Image (cartoon, rainbow, N blue to C red):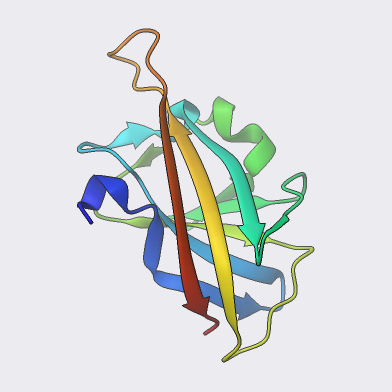
Length: 126
């Protein structure tokens, strides 16, 4: 799998006090502002996850997923993972889950383009 096709980060899925934490990778060949990224969907074992309370963590910053379109000054660097915290999802360490993630990107220098990037992987919770 090419790096621009991998959207679930190597850090995988983690159980935290705040809920499940999923590593995400930017599916593009260069850094982009978060404002052009859309987390379209997340499924855990085939069930859709409600993203209304989800939070994005990146480089010591965090913001609600619902405000990702406003993050014009926060850039997602291609070599770094961002993390999606899912407060309403409880997972236990060492359990395995099938995780499906869809990230859409609309690079600002290619007007009208939206690239849809799906990925499904079986992850063991850290």
